Length: 208
View 1 (cartoon, helix red, strand yellow):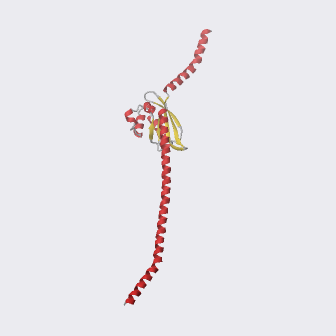
View 2 (tube, one colour; view 1 turned 180 degrees about the horizontal axis):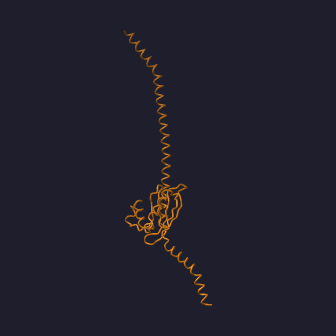
View 3 (cartoon, helix red, strand yellow; view 1 turned 30 degrees about the vertical axis):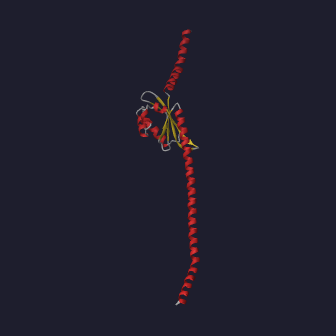
């Protein structure tokens, strides 16, 4: 019996010894797989980090451009309306508020629809102004200029200019200039130029 027990132990030890290389090989394969997974995760993490850094840089540039744009608009003498890429108002200056008679307490919360509705009540030809606005939204990359008569007798020059940052269009700017006095003076000059030769001729006739 003792010899049988010893023989069984020797067989078990031999079997365990035979299985050891297979176990080591399997563990090595699992370790290699885990290393590949870790390496792949690290590559993805590095790609994501670079993408986030790029987006953060673009965001900083956009904020700097917006700050510059806002300061430029506020310093301008014309009423200026900055539109975003999808035709949405993002900023207007104090002169714009003054030209369109926007109540100060409503200026900060005025949305696109309310702004357009307010403008349409102040122009003599609302349909023509609406066409101008729709064309600006549909083709913001195009320069355009139109004159509009206001219900209070003023004459507004409206000019659309594309807004770009490093060659990439980010929106458009619409400038509103009150040219009422300029138009009146031009009309006066035209009248004087027309009447002056006749008055000169009349004066010469009386002298002769």
